[in-house]
Length: 272
Image (cartoon, rainbow, N blue to C red; front, side):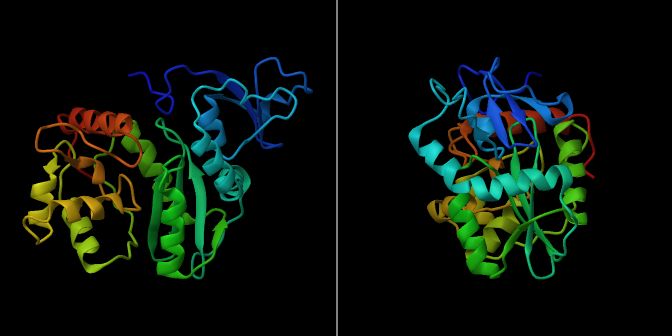
């Protein structure tokens, strides 16, 4: 199945250079990078939210139709952490998660995801272009009170391996430890989400009942949207009672893709 490029309608291909951290148009007049340091990236949006900056010579953002002004500002705001997390993917040193949240960018077919762990568990897994990501990072800082550092960690390696299996259609469930601080109702909602099998869905009304507050579907939807552990706590498995997919922090197109992917896997795999 062909993978979408961050929901773009018209996608340009760019050259991203790991050593300089910039991305260029095809045919940029700057000196060509070594092949081992360069990779092709579909779309300016994906390049920016992978922690790259636009080249000042070929100006790849000029005419890039896949970006809004708000997305450009958010990418600039997130650039320090995304750039560090991208470099950690390639050559970061191992760090302890005892007194810090250790982050890396993990590549997926649906775009890069920012993952964060402590020694107690995974506390962050979000698509890096999600509009709520800056807010989620601020909430995580308030809840845990730990600095965010880029690097490698055993739990990040384990999570990356399981994500690769999931997107390859070889894994239905994850078994990494989770660290998800929140209000009592948020935690009960997230526990309810974790009981929805891959290939199945709940309505918001059913989620409210499972969370112990029948009739509170609006509050359940808010708690669902506050989830910081995409895929691991499967908030994408909640749909409208009409059968429509409804909203999703990572974009409706991703939600539809994930639900379709899991339905196919559920017919052939036994949960891990």
